[in-house]
Length: 191
Image (cartoon, rainbow, N blue to C red; front, side, top):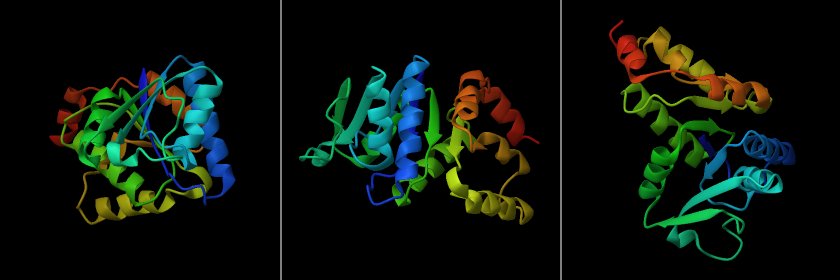
């Protein structure tokens, strides 16, 4: 399975986040999956890649060519694909992925999550989306979803389009066992 991981590229974050990303990368590789990610060598992206690399996992990085400067990209990718734009990068990541993990991150990570979440709500894909809610990082997203549902901006069933986890193994098991279909999403939309 190709698992796309979104997450911070900053090395300034608490090292616990990076250590968790390394563990996610290790387990992705140990379970025989391929890591699909934005190609970065730093932060959560770099941590996940180092973890997968430490277990001889397959690592596919996708990065815009303007990121090809010293120290920015992970140098041990099995395959590194260059794109012209960030938009093309996101499209390739989406197409190559069988599942998505959203680790803590900034604006870029939130934008990637919301796009893939929206595409699922529109029945453009039926792939699992798992958010790693380390240290309650995504608690405010959960609250925002509840408010959007209460105020009728979002259907209650939209909660089922993604799942939040605080345990890495449980998150990977969810992805591996996920059996959602486009038909399920279309039925949800008709409720």
